[in-house]
Image 1 (cartoon, one colour):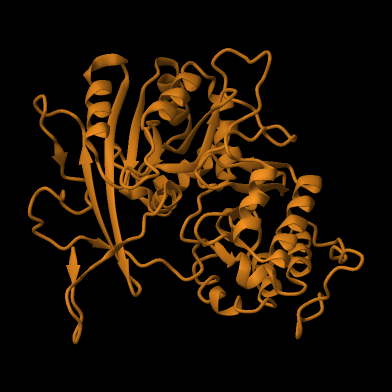
Image 2 (tube, rainbow, N blue to C red):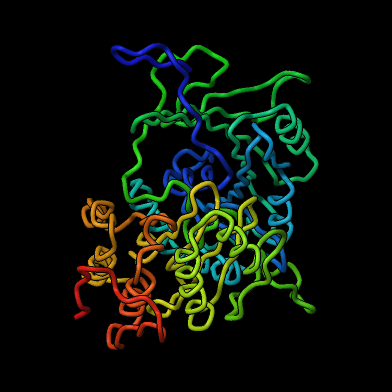
Length: 441
């Protein structure tokens, strides 16, 4: 796609979906893009984990009890990801799982009970909803293994088409599969999204790119009668980051020597065992390779606080190490902050996940405390007006390398979690608060 502004030559728009975490973030923020037939939008939980080691980028549940498993992965470029395996692993783990365990696993990732999130989505969409009927429908789908697998990719490649066609040929009754292609381009604050869908229901050897839901543009392979959907991301939203927890790509649970049959892994206070290129050594090796030493030290201090005083650490499974610090907030597990180490390492304060559990005045107090850090106040613009449903992304090198940044963040989070407690003191010999910082009240 080419674009020309007055006084400029024609040039190509740049793709901004540089990894699967960006795909995941896009769908967490706009679940209406997911091609799931049924009433209303899906209530989604990111990095959903089931069984001892099965995980998927997103899990969505509709008001009618339908369950969608969403895998995100790039198909263009060197970081190409095979598709379908993670979703099938989660489907197998959820098959015949009890509703209560499914609900508990969803709440760990979404920060709220399943029924609460689905009821809110149904209300927003004007959909009639009954909790008892809903729970029975979910239980029936779990019992029969009735799931939809959505493969969200930047490009619906031939390999993805073959996977979709094969799985839809009747390999497993009750499983339906669809590929969602998301071509996402951006330049100077303008974002253009061109979705396509492939269901594998064409003649052998043919591609079937079907029209997407009401809010999506026509497929790329046919002339578009209307302009593609354009969206603009608010300044305080981290370009790549999901619902509890982040990573932007899923985390795996620790192995259980005596797992209950077909049961969803219950939340545990010990940190899950990291997998692949994840874990504390990989996280800090990636930060040390790309960040200033003071910035790495700041992240390390916040990480140690979360490891020692939080509920658990949730690790990513993507190409770049990532971690989310989960704390108990009002008796609920919530991913308070996340750290990503991709092209631009970032420390993300997850206001969006805190909003359902923390009064607005305390969220504003958290914003005010973080606003003591250089360059942060302007990023907080519009946060309150958005109901705090955004994530505040802080560049590790630009913000956390500042003297006293870790102290400000640690004190702000401690005050949020326990308003009656005094701020966490600076470590002996540690950096002093940044110049001009306001004293904590």
